[in-house]
Amino acid sequence: MSRYFVTTTIYYVNDVPHVGHAYTTLAGDITARYWKQKIGKNNVFFLTGTDEHGQKMARSAKEKGLTPKKFVDSVVPRFKDAWKLLDIEYDHFIRTTDPRHERVAQRLLQKIYDGGFIYPGEYEGLYCVGCEKFLTKTDLVDGLCPLHPKEKPIHQKEKNYFLKLKDLAEKEVLPRIEKGEYKILPLKRKNEIVSRIKQGVEDISISREGVSWGIPVPWDKKQTIYVWVEALMNYFSATQFVKGKKSFWPADVHLIGKDIVWFHSVIWQALLIAAGEKLPKTIFAHGFFTVEGQKISKSLKNTIPPKELVDLFGVDGTRYILFAEIPFGSDANLSIRRFKERYQADLANGLGNLVSRVAKLCEMDNAEGIKEFSSDQQLLRSSLKKGGFYNHMETFKFSLALEELWREMHGLDKKIERDRPWDKSSEERRGYLKSYAKRLLSLAKELQPFLPETAEKITTQFKGPKITAQKPLFPRL
Image (cartoon, rainbow, N blue to C red; front, side):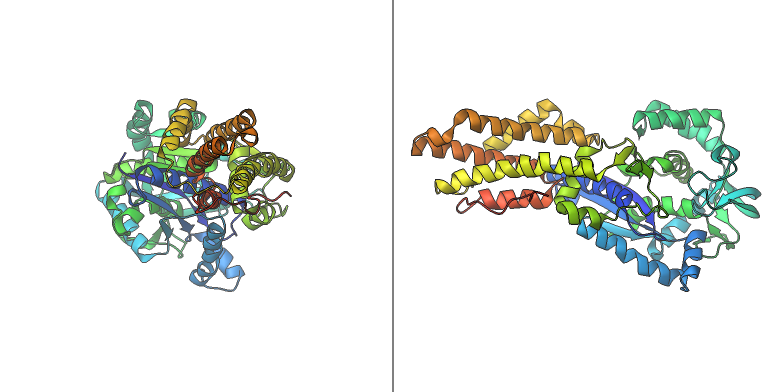
């Protein structure tokens, strides 16, 4: 693979970033860092950003006494600051109010219209402002949106433009899914999508008549592009206007939450097929979070800002526990108690103790730093390959990948116990200590996507010039 393009969901800016946003974006960062090590930094494109149009955004701005543009401009820095705090290194942060995105979205929609896949019509039904989408009867629970039960859906009747989704989904999208032309992961998500298509698909509205805060439909300026449609287009548009990124389309993976699988694996594919563009290779949907058994909710004040976790566990501690504790793709209950237990066992008492132990032994022996460790790196890679580490990384099984790295660490700890270097002669001991330091340097390289700051500290410590003991990598809580 010579190129790799990973995207996250782009996030609504009517809210502040919380642990759910962080989880998706960290997964993108881990994936991008892994591939940058494998194929080179310039050959990987990691895209994230914010979704800034729509009725919900206009309403939030009005509540704050601001214009929509001033409102979104005031909130976007919160996301950028959160990703900086978590040591997330994206290659581009896209905003859907960027005029360059708006121009690409209009060109793409015009191409679909010119191809005969869009027609005028009238829509009548229920619209959830919180979701920014029209709802069917099957979407409702007791007549309410299950995601926004405190706000009744609005009855809408307006002239819109419609995408021929029924024909596209049944004749184009479904066969491509079944042939494996693109993947929907985990497998249960694919099965849900296939079942839903086979039950019957309706054409969808792709424009809004009464929403001014949006991108105008190119052939009818009285209408704006439905926010979900133009938001999906961000993945494509970024490759068209970010310098040097045109060759990265199609995306290798869209990392999303499971609530928006339909949009990404059916509607987005239909739009791309209608426009004659290539399809993304993989859609991966992770699960939902609860906090101490309760659904994440602003009203319950349990959204967990990233800073709260960083204050408790540090940056790398936060990155680690989220992906070691939670199998990526599954629903999970976030428990600070369990996070603390994982931190203590795996980081403070595990990796931290191991690094400290080897460093102290080396310091006592006045050991030189390690300049060359390629042979140990090859041995470790062989062992990790046998254990499935690289396959786990490339199929987003991050918790299993971390298990493999910790297996190697436990193996090194046991080897030190067996070797008992403190009982050896000075010359023998130095040989043992050098091998331990090389092993830690090799492990640091593989740890880098998950724990970039820790990996750098280990590398600096054991590459010298002298190996000395440092402050604990992970202080006890």
